[in-house]
Amino acid sequence: CIGIFMSWLYKFLDGGILTNLVFLILAVVSVLISIILYIKSKKEKELVFIAKSFELIENATSSIDNLTIKYGNENVEALTLTKLSLWNNGKATIDAKDVVDSDKLRVELPESIKIYSAVIEMTVKKYNCIKLYIEDNKIIINFDFLDYGDGAIINFYHNGTSEQNIRLTGTLKGALP
Image (cartoon, rainbow, N blue to C red; front, side):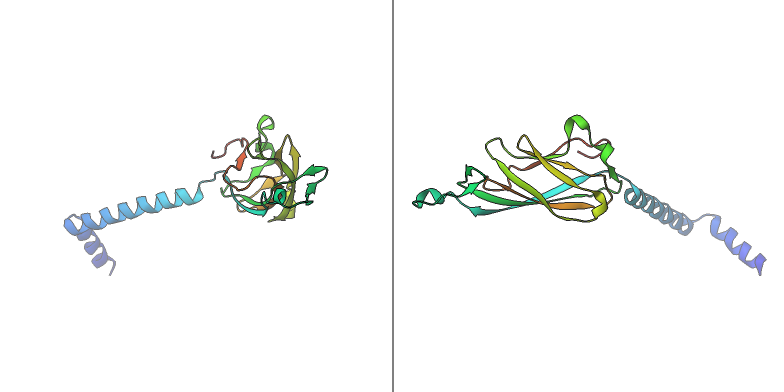
């Protein structure tokens, strides 16, 4: 039985168009599988965000007599709530030490827009220890770590009118831009 199989295997491997075609298909499939597995296993740090703004007060208060709206001691003509979701879309964990101290992770708006407050609405994991503070009209974002899919939803109030000019900036070591 083994002799018959060996004889058939020898004839099959001896050459011919069918043998060459089978090995060519196997080679192409192997290369494709290797590429797919490489892409899936590649570990990158990629912090992404999306923002959506909701205008709560439009510049209509000035047209109504005796109506003033204040935030603290400051008159507010327009008030917008922006919900910003950010998360690690890369497979590699982003650690706090990956954030460059001289270029902290922050949310920036144009200079003409004032940020009134910022709070975290939700985090994926409480152990990420995501914290916010406002400094020089920018929202500074600190965290311990962000695994794949970890992130937060940040709500902040400002006097702008849309999310078009909102930028998430900062430098992460070894991360995609």
